[in-house]
Image (cartoon, rainbow, N blue to C red; front, side, top):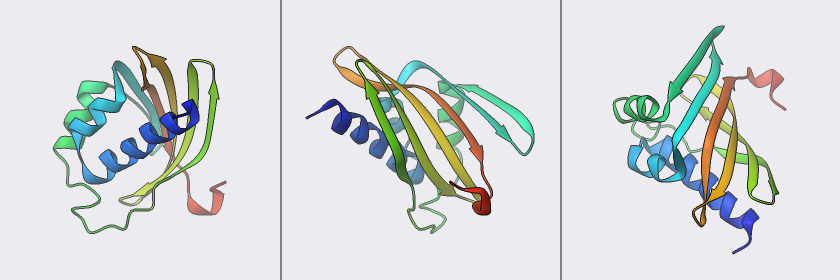
Length: 125
């Protein structure tokens, strides 16, 4: 499997984990020291991985709410042992754009940072 395919597999697992509310699956694709940053409703958002996974585990997932799966990678770039993925993640009443930073460490690709925000659909690129 190429690095690009391996990163895409991590991104696909990430999307599945978010959609299904599967904190265990998400933990498997994130680096243990990963951090999440965002701007939501005009407010800064920052959580360490464990806090984010607790939120995911304790909310009703998009799948459980009967939402249609529409998440998809928009761009992936791999340079040696680092990678970047832009992911469109519409769910709940939000139209999220996620930027995921990944590293290849210990023989596998892991998300080390998630940066995200809601983008009104008319502004989505």
